[in-house]
Each structure stands twice: as structure tokens, then as C-alpha cells.
Length: 424
Image (cartoon, rainbow, N blue to C red; front, side, top):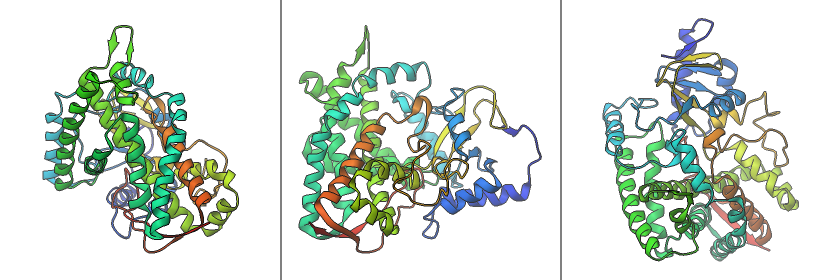
């Protein structure tokens, strides 16, 4: 079991910090904004041995160190933790999920070296920066379609017309998913990611499992179709990706396809919605951006930092290790709070201030180390095209109602974002 290298454990502080973490991991209507609690962690317990079954890190440097240390890796296939949930039925179902999926290949997100190194190397050949940049024009076209819908509606939910359908359209076209299947696949992905949340209920986990099986079946059929009829898409590239005699198996292509679709859709949806929300909450920065469109790239970086689409990441100790003031044993669990790292006052001046012209440390929103998000450049490019498009098309975009967050923390984003637009 993990233990501090030096210094006694303050039981009262541990209890108070566990209460804070529970409100972060299982947010209620009054707990939508985690940043005040991140500040509490930074000042009181930046390295916390929780009562939930893991060690929690909130500082930028600690988070970066953990994520770049290969002694800490994926815990796929290992015993699950009750971190964030006290429901015995949900805990038991999580264990069943691990057991039931044991026979299926994992994507690189759930692998450790050398298996991770091999798979990521093969996938990267079909997911190069050149390929991403080559589709910028197509992404701009898809953005324009969504903005046309928004302009025609005048007042609408920007999540429904822009933030949710756009990333699905982009990743679908990249992978070669037929347009008529986009709505159904989008719905399955929304259910799939429920299992990532620490506080997922039994019903959430059951929906996630059903979605996983549905996606596995769908992409299984699509892979076989593309194997017989290759096309100029990412799925065909994954099927053909090889290094000498080594190729991705059919099961690996399935696992990677589901990962890329899920990550490519959910995170960028949250980037767009969270960005609109931040601009509405900071009208001075909204006015600044509309007057200075050249600030779009730095504005997207600040959105990623200020309200990260992904707020935490988990690791498991693969061998005994001592790091960041903690001594770990094999199978000890770690939580790195990416959102808290992005608000570390030792790395970001006045971290709770939203500043679209901010310069400084790279954001931790895409993680770090060998599991750094493969689609980071794609997400940034989509975000840039969306906000540049909004400025180009609309003299103004105004909030038109409440903007509640979904009760999640791993993938943090808005439930809805009603807006009114005024075309130029």
C-alpha cells in the first residue's frame, strides 16, 4: 500500500480532503465548478493518500512526472478500485466488465510497453500531422455547414447544432463511417464513456457495456467491408498499417477505431462547449477575441487550460517505486488531476483568470508521456476552425439561457448551451 516517504498523516485533513474529492468526482448541481476545490488541494493536500483506494496528485510538476514515468501505466485487466463509488453492485459490475473483456484486444490507451510501443507506432503511421493538416479544408467545410444551421435557426442549442455533431462528422469522415450511421454511432459513444466516470452508477455501467458491444459489432462489420473494398480513409490505413511483417490484427483495428472515434468525438465536443461557456462568462475576453481573430490559437489553448475537456487521468503502479514523496507498491492506484494541474499557481500566474492571450507552460489537458493524446492536433485544429468560423460568420453570439454541466468530471462538458446569433 502506498505511503508517504516522510511525515505523519493528518487524519482530519485526510477526511476533509476525501470529502472534497468526492464532490469533485461525483459532482452535483452545486458542485459544477471544481476549480475552488482544486485550489484547496493545492494549498492543503497536493499529494493525498485518499480513503478511496488511490493517491491523488494535483500539482503540475507531480502530474507531469507521474505520467512520464513508465513504472506507472495502464491498469487494464487488473483488479478494479471502488474509487469514487460506494455502490457494491456498481463495483461488482466493474469487475465483471474487466473479466468479460479479457478476451478482446485492447487499444493502446489500455496497454503498457512493449505492446503499447508496437501498437502506437503502427497507428501513428496512419495518423500523422500531415494527414491531420491535409483535412483542415474539409473540417472548415463541415464547420461552415454547422454554422449555416446555426444562422438559419437564429436561436438554438449550440451543443445540438455545433459542438456535438461537428466532431462526430469529422472523425466519421476520417475513419470512413457512412454519414447515415453518424447519429447512431454518436449515441453509442455517449453511452460508452459513462464507465470512465468514478461515480458511474450501475445503470451507467450497463449502458456503457451495451454501447461497447454495439460499437464492437458495428466496427467489426465495417472493418471487414473495408478489407474487401479499401478506400482513402483512416480505417483502411489502419488495416494496411504495417512495419515489416508486423500488422495490426483485426481485433486491434477494432479497438483502435472505437478509441479514436470516442476520443475524437467527446473531447472536442467539450472543448467547443466549454469554450463558449468561458467566453460568455468573461465578456471582456469575448469582445477581445471578436476584435482580434488572430488570437484564436492562443484562445483555444486557454480554453483547454481553463476548463479542460478531460479533467483527470489514472495510472497503476507496475512495480515498486518511490516518486513525488510517496512510496508505491505494485498495483497501487494513482489519480492525476489534469484540471488541477492546469490551475497550479506555481506554474500559471493568477490561474483562475481566463486570459485568451496567455503564454507560458504547455497545458496538461492531453496528458503527457507515452499516452499523450494522439488526436491532440486534431482537437486543436477543430477548435480553431470553429471559433474562427464563429467570428467570421457572426457579428455576435450571445447566451440565451442556462448552461448546465453534465454531472461528470473525467469528460467535463455542458449538457446544453442555448445561444442567439446575429449574422454579419
